[in-house]
Structures are given as C-alpha cells and as structure tokens.
Image (cartoon, rainbow, N blue to C red):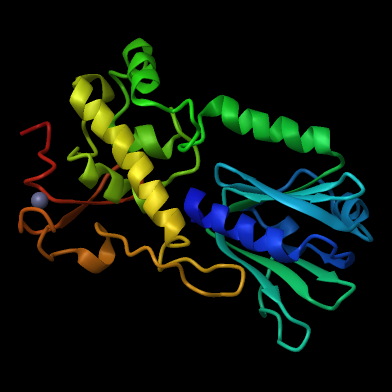
Length: 282
Ligand SMILES: [Zn+2]
C-alpha cells in the first residue's frame, strides 16, 4: 500500500509537473471493481474532470488531492498500486483503473493493487471536508502539535488503551494517520515494542519512544522517497529498505544479533526481534 511517505513523494512529484495540464480523456474502468471505491457514477466522474486544468496538488495522510482551476478535485488515497505519468512517446500500462490523458498527450494512470479510493469531488469545499475528516480521525505524524507531551496526555486519557495493541494503534490510525503495515514493523522495532503490547501497559518512556519511532521512520522514509518496494510517478522505486520484513526474515537483528522472526497478527504479517521486542504473554 502507498503510505504517508510514498504519498508525500508522489504529491511533490505531481506538483512539479501537473499544474497547467488540461484533461482531454477521462477513463475510469476501475469504477466497476469491488475494491476500487468511488461514489460518483461514470458520467458524473467524467463530467467533473473532462476539460479541467490542474492547478495544484496536496497530500493529507495517505490521500492525494489534485485540485483543478475550475474547482473540481481528483482524490486518490488509501490505495495500493501505481500512479504513473507516461510521456506521449511511451506506451501506457496495459492494466489501469483510472486514466487521464492530457492535451499535451501525456497520461496519468492509476493501477490499484489490493484496494483504493478514487473520487472526483465537485468543488474544493467537498475535498477539504474529506481532508478534515481524515485529520479528525487522527493526526499528521509530522504535525507540530504531535509532541511527546501531547501524545502522553492523549494516551493517558484514551479510553480504548486497554483494548488496543501497539500494531493496531498504528495501522488503525488511533492517534496518527497515513501509516500502515508497511512501516509498522520498523517503527515497533525502533520502539522496542512487541506488536501485542496493549497501549495502556506502555510506561511513559515506552510511549515516548513509540512516538519518536513513528516520526523517525516517517522522516527517514520521506528522505528516501518511500520504500524500495513501491514506485513513484515515473515507475522508480524508493530508497527506504525495510529493516524488519520479508527480505530480512531469519537474518540477525541489527541491534542484538538474534534472528528476526515472522508471525501473523491483526490481519497481516509481523516481523520482530524476539529479544528486543519481548512478547508480553511470556
Ligand atoms: Zn534484537
């Protein structure tokens, strides 16, 4: 899935090239797919975007917003897959869920993997309402208000803390938004927390280390333009090598040399160091 760092990188790449491009062809075959979520009908989607010229691009959590000069907004988020800009002299991907070809004959395609949300909002107010809903759910990990003190205050007052484990805390966006299973393994390793640790069992130091780890991994991944397993607007991989993942399973932990292990938990694979991240049940 494209998480906060990948979306941030895509937003900055789009912002460099997309303003001024006018949409000539709108094709949205993914609309009929079960795991491509949209609320517009095909004609409404086309009518909102056809002939419009992009103005600027923003990101919020794991969502992209492409604003047009006329007011309509294309939003793509909560998605896996590839968002690609193809020059006029190169073939576009054979399979795509959304295609916008511009009057300069370049083409933007979105090929959803797993699931994804693609919307065409009629106006800026609707898009901003969606952004606000995202941020009402949880905070941008790098927002200046996301501090150790604010996090601790929130955590100690949080009624669900005894029910939610550290993995679910991240992937189900309880305090910060935009991060999923892809970065959770590295975050929990940096924080020296087992994914099963219930959030109310974290002492103050552990809680602060968790927030530090979230921000550290996010910043490192943004600097590297996302993970090596994801692609940017020009089909190039990012530079962030996941430390705790499929590629490092069975290899020594970078900190203690114990072997990295894998298990399934909360609907996905977890990779941990059993020494650095002790199981709370043992
Ligand atoms: Zn270790």
